[in-house]
Image (cartoon, rainbow, N blue to C red):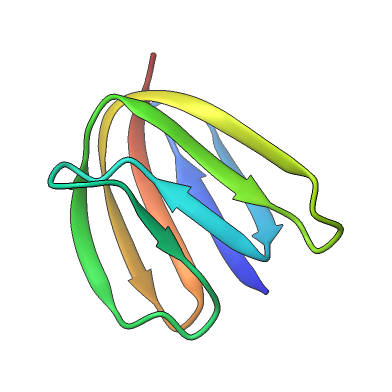
Length: 80
């Protein structure tokens, strides 16, 4: 599982996910367990995640930055 930490100017939340889909500035990308470390900017779009049962949820963002390291994704975002 991957820990997804979403930080906004007014709130934060932590989610356990099997996969996370991010709207990268250069192109959208998926993060699975064991992903290589990366830092990327994010563009307007939707952060989506899938839990262990296959259920998907998401959050619309305006922009942000993301860091992936050791199965922890930290996304600092501005919400739409």
